[in-house]
Every structure is written in C-alpha cells, then in structure tokens.
Image (cartoon, rainbow, N blue to C red; front, side):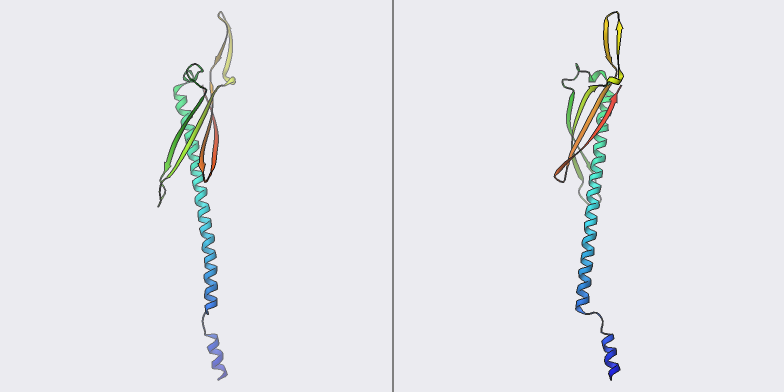
Length: 155
C-alpha cells in the first residue's frame, strides 16, 4: 500500500503553479521579442530616411550641375542660398507607405581652389571656374529633427 501512494504522487503531472509560472516566463520572452522587433523597425526607418536624404542631396547637386557654373553666378541667382522641400515615400511590406518630408538648403559659393587671376591688356581679371555647393538636408523623425550635410563642386 505504501508503494502505490508513492507512485500516485510521482505521476501527478503539472500543477496550476507551474503552469502560471511558465505563462509568466513566456510572457516576458514575448515582450522582449516585441521590443527587439520594434527597435529593429525604428532602425530600419531611420536608415531608410537617411538614405533618402543622401539621394535628395545628390539629386540637387546633379540638377544644379546640369545647369552649369554660369547659371550659378551671382548675377544669375537672386540669392546664393536655395531652399526647397521634397517628399519621398517607400512602400512597406504589410503596411502603409513611409512618407518623409525633406527640407533642403543649398549654399552656393565660389570655390577658391579653382580660380585664377589673369593680367591682360584689360587689366586684372578674376575668373572662377567652379562653384561649391554645400547642401543641408533635414527631416523630422520621432519628434526630433535629423540632418545631413553634403558637399559638391561644379566645374
């Protein structure tokens, strides 16, 4: 009779306390995985927005490069600062598209490394053969403003 009581105690199975503890542990693990997934999502959005800002800056430099140096002279431009906004969007898998509004500021200046002074029959002439474009692209992300600076030379 003593043996049958010991066998019944060993084959009892899981109790309610063990099941509740395992549910709590699994809940903590699920919360940790959810937090990790949200962090990865934010990092992906931040990287994608930064890559978009680099593309916007390069597009601005390429567009002004097509115009040429003469179109960027002080007499052709009313100001040596150009500002505009541009919106880019990306399709996400299983969700709404991401839309980012970029503010672009371009400072146009003479590049002294590409200038020369000639003394000729007409006197001293200063020629600038290149323009420096300093581009700043800024965009909002999670309540803060992020920005990059990009620079290029048009000859």
